Length: 128
Image (cartoon, rainbow, N blue to C red):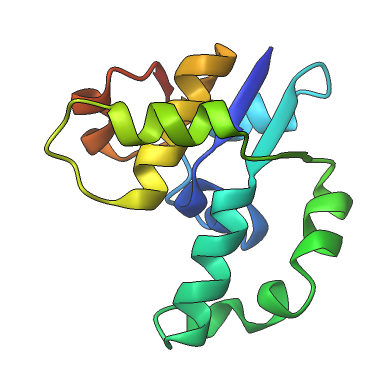
C-alpha cells in the first residue's frame, strides 16, 4: 500500500506520541507499505516552526530531510496538476496545506494517514 501521511501524524510518529492511533502506527511500521511525505508537509513544518507554533520540533526542523530518510519515508513532490486540483477543490476548507494534501491524495490514488476530520469535506480516503 502507498499512503500519504498528514503533518500531525508525521510529527506524532517522529516523536513516538501516543496520540498516533494503533492502526496508523501499524500501517507506518509495515515495511511492505510505502509512506509518502508531501513537500507541502515540509513547508508546513518549517513555517510553523519559524513562527514559534512548533517549538518542540526544533531537531526535526534542523534536519527534516534526514529525519524522513531515517524513517524510511519517500518524498512526494508538488506537481502543476496537484496545484490545479488544490485550487479547484469545491470545499469551504481554507487551509492551503490541507487542500494540497487532499489534491495529492485524490490525484495519486493515495489514502491519507490523518486524524483530521476536515478531510471528509475534501472527499479524501483516510486511514486512522
